[in-house]
Image (cartoon, rainbow, N blue to C red):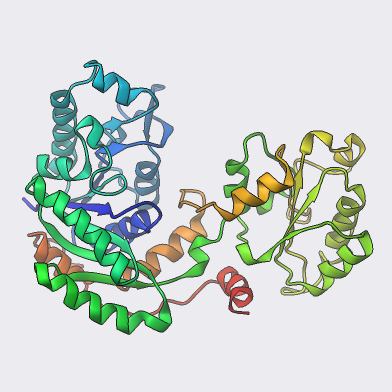
Length: 417
C-alpha cells in the first residue's frame, strides 16, 4: 500500500490549500483512486451525512472543497474530517474530557477507511507543524500516527523562508517525522531563478529536495465580493448579487469623499473594475452610481462599468433608496453591498484580509490548480514519499505558464500599472 502524503505549512497564508488542490489533481492523473483527509480541522461547514439520510455533520471547510470539486464520491465526509477543534475544545482536553488516545484512534480509523478505497491518500494539515499541539494533535504528531513524511509549504524567499522551514523541520524531527520535501509559493518573478537556485542548495544541507517553486500570481489574492460579504457580519446585497463572484484588487479601492460631479468623473476615468466605498448618507453617490451603471450596461465588452459599491453604516441607509433597488437583481443591476460597520473599520479589515479558496469561487480555484500543478515535480514527490504510480494515465512533470482567464487579465492589467 502506498504511504500517505502529508502537507503542512510553515505558517498561515502561505498557500497550503492551493498546493493541496494542485497535488490532488496531479495525483488523480497518476492513480486510479485518490483519497483525501484533513485529520484535524478548525473552520467547519455543515453537510449531509451520506450514511444516514437527513442527518447533518460538521466537517472542515477544505474537505468540502476537495470532495465536491474533485468528485471524491468513493469517500465519506465523516472519514475525511475526523477531528474538529471548535471553541472550548482545548479547555475540554486540558480538563480531561477529551483524551489523546480517543483522538488518535479516531484519526487512525478514519484514515484506514479512506485508504481502504484509495490508491494513495493526501493528508492536509492545519497551519504549521505544531498547530494543534496543545491537544496533542499537532501536524507532526498526527503524521507520526499515520507513518507519513511531511511536505512543507512556505512563502517564497530565502533567509526568512529557510528560517521558518528549519524551525518546522526540527519540530518534525522531534516527533520522528521526516520532511520529504518543500514547496515554496508566491515567489516574485524577477527573483524566481535566483530564489530557486539558492533555496535548492540550502535545503540540500539536510537532504531535503525542493519539490516545487511557484511564481507569484496576484490574482489569487484578489477577494471576490462574496468574500467581503462573509467578512463583514450583518452585510447584505441590496443589488447585483449575481456579481458576487467578481474579483477586485486592493489597489483599486476608493473611499468616496468628494462631490457627486467628481465621483461621476472618477467613474468614467478610472478602470472599469474598481471598488468604491461610501457612507450610507450619500444618496447622491448611490443614485449616481446606479445611473452610470445603467447608462453603460449595453456598452460592448471592456466598456461596461464593472465597479462595485460598498455602503458603510448601512443602518442609516435611506429606505426610499432601498426601494429603488431590487434585491433579486439580475446581471444588469450594479453590485451594491451594505455593511453595518464604519468606513474606517471596513478599510482596515479589507486591507488586512487574505481571501481563502472556497467551493463557490470556481474561477479562482481553477486558476490556482492550473498554476500550482504545472510547477510541482510529481515524480520527485512520489519518490520522496515512497509511492508508486498505479494508473495508466500517469503524466510527467512539465513546468510552464498556463493561460489566464479573461477576468484575471482585466484585473492584472490594473495591478501591472
